[in-house]
Image (tube, rainbow, N blue to C red; front, side, top):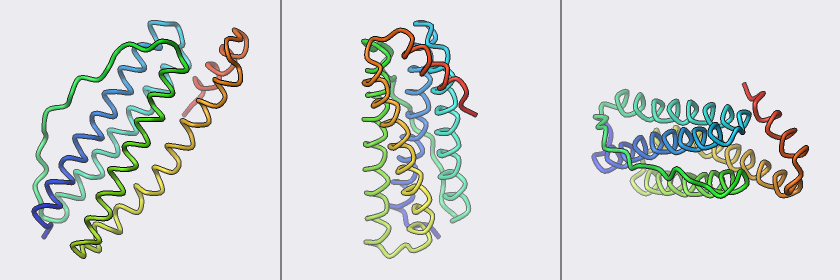
Length: 162
């Protein structure tokens, strides 16, 4: 049986993962409006990935005999200055998600919930990838600066994400 406090914290993580999906959809919508179609595609894929993360938590809670409760999701921002600022916001968001995962892991260790600790290890590794991926895009956008050809090339590459 899942510890009551852990159940509550995992439910909060479901909400956070779904907020992440909602945020990335908002970023995709902004990119579409600004004709950054490759980046919009990238963010839509990212949103799908976040929904999958929420479902991993959902299934884990159910499997451990807990109860998944869906809470309201906050409205994400919808305006950014430029493409770089969108990806900088995405990177900053991923660092916050990493902290949440680490806090969950610390709590699992504190209460000696070894099964949850094991499950969370997947998310620890996933966050390394998430942060690295968004930081790389931020760094590339900074390198191309305002170069139209560089921005268009990078946007095209982002549109090839599977």
